[in-house]
Length: 135
Image 1 (cartoon, rainbow, N blue to C red):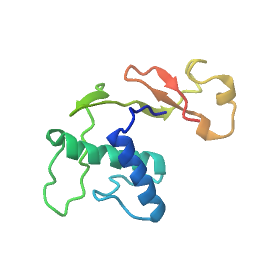
Image 2: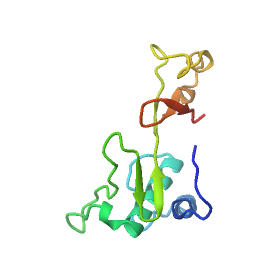
Image 3: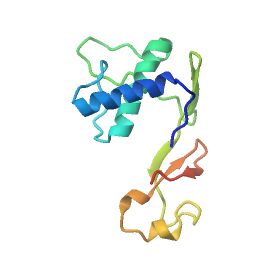
Image 4: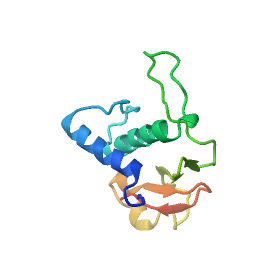
């Protein structure tokens, strides 16, 4: 789930990254992760690029030119909303549902009893409350 203002620099960069992904080309700053999922990979690279361009005071400088380090600094827990230039970024966490001991609200029976593990993930806000399911 994602929301963005029209002409969002982060979304525009993410769309450019999807094209790069389809062509087999890395973005200028690299993907920054070993994940194999196109959506999270292209969005992370977009967030890093916009952060480096629009609010460089929140990025770390590489120790040396050859280092491959994560340039994106996640806000400290539980701060998942932050300002970057004129952008406000609010992030959520995706994690596995607690279908064994969790609430019916978090993991309804149709999810708990489903054989496809993909339905056993949720999107959670900074307080740990489920706000959505990705599938």
